[in-house]
Image (tube, rainbow, N blue to C red; front, side, top):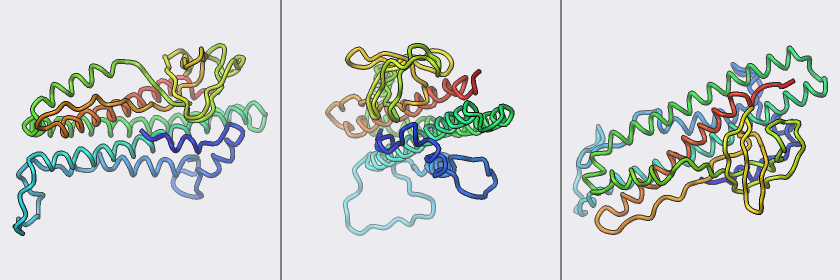
Length: 292
């Protein structure tokens, strides 16, 4: 998964400016602070929520007229390879858009808390804004789940065709899933302070640089225990990280090797997206609260 967007993320001191840039005037939800990110995420998700473009080998899309211009017939499985490559690109796009949206939501929550702490808004107003933000986040998570469900449905639909074109694909898919395990390798979306305890006001004991890969384990209050190289260790909000791309298992040789490799990379991307959704849900439990 590309992390180029995270390298462009602003530091915490520019959070208000980032939020202002996200917003667009007017519209049906004037309080939406991440409208551009929502639009990008919804648009990329349409690739999966629209009817699947895939057709079984030997079939032509509805309305296509068969022609023969003297060219040799396509290699068996070529259509599946093309479909899997396109789907991998579509998953990359929706993953980047989802990460960008989550980061914008995380910044929104920080801005609300900062304004309350600075007495720029009364607590009732801040509570109302945070409640509206949580509702928007839940909407985002519901759409992400719908995208994930659609991905799994497409996989089931073409499973038999893939196995026929590349025998052993099912077994390779099971191995890829088993090898992925429960380890969560993540990347910092921006420079992230590490705290002594899973609390926003706890002493800072270190920092994770933007783009740095670390591992996380869920803690409490929307925080995760972060561990990295060189003894790096501390607590940080789960929403500050995005899933690092898993490396797909190397393809085995023989007939159908390319399809089996594409199946493995497809699984890795789907699981990355599923884990991003899981981390976002953990952050939503208590990471979008005003605090005392």
